[in-house]
Image (cartoon, rainbow, N blue to C red; front, side, top):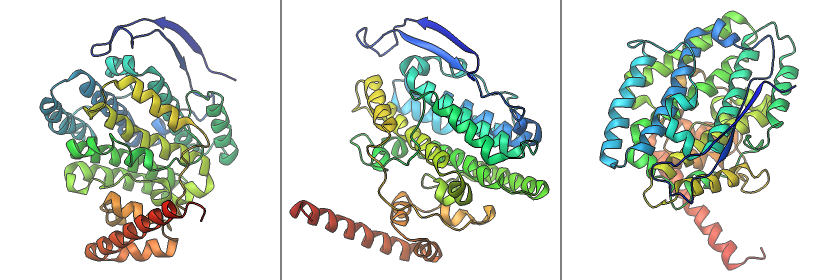
Amino acid sequence: MKGLTVFYLTAFLFCGVSPAEARVEKREAIFYLPGKYNFATQRIYPEFNDMLNIIDIGHGALAEILITTKDEAKAIRLIEEDLFNQVARMFLGKQPRPRFSPSEETIAPEGVKLAWRVNKAFDWTHYLHRQVYDILSDDRATDKDRVIHEALHYYLTEPGRIFPLRIKSMRLMEGQAFSGYWKEKFPKFNGAIWAYHWLQLAANEALLEPDPQARRMKMETAVDEFKKMFIDPSRLPKHMPMAHEISPAFSDRFPEIAATFDNLHSFHDIYMDILTNPSVRNKRDEVYRQLDLMQAPKEDLETMPLHSLPPIPIREQQRLLQMSPEEAMAMMMMSTEEQMAFLKMSPEERRERTERRQGEGRENHREMQDHPGM
């Protein structure tokens, strides 16, 4: 059963987009799969729900600033200082929090005009995020696995909006010509986005707790740890958290949904790199090309094993979150036992191990080039 669908057409000329690029795109809004559990998160975990609403505002406002501010130095100040401080005040309760998540068109009208297909994919996958939280929060949904798979099936009825059910290669996020520009120029807000991802994954794991009181304690702990990151930005993640690290039980139980969420999160970084990197002239065409690459179900799949970590208590995850992207990538090639030993190493030992792993990887790559039949 489909939710209410509204169709409307719009033509536009976007500032910075040539007339040849501007084109009519069908606008359509599809609502959640109907279920008595809908909006349970808002009722049962209101502060966590507030965090999700602020995250939605932060994402939209970020894209709008990047698209409408042509001076990079000004954009850096607006994002690294003004916007970061604004969302931090809301997270910490020093500024009124939004009761609802506003539509993207309200927060980022120019962003929506630039890449409507991306907005549709983001919104649709965020709906799946929210429905999973609602189902896991509401104990009236007694067969949670079945109901979550119903939500996943509903998600898959819109193939143009979905992210794949297998994890795409990190090369798409880290290894392209435009990659890395966003986190280099906007390191603090990049850390904020990775903190958003961490909270969402930590909630997936916490909500699997069958006992309601223990579940509530874990959810409150996750929100508290999240807020600490905005009190002390040095605690913000140094690499993009992934499901196999932060929500291993959820990842093992719902691997397709976990992969979809990881792909969504990595595409956020790809999108930010495209918007910020001046070498990308035609932003829309490149965004759509990258969305096509990301949505291709069988191409560019991650080949590293991604062994899940044992569940790490929420208050003990800072050691993991402070690892660099290079260290996190090195861990992705390790067995579970090797990963746990790696986590216990000193920063110097981890750096040495990472450099050795990178050297081995480069050597293997050269051997494959020299002996392609191997």
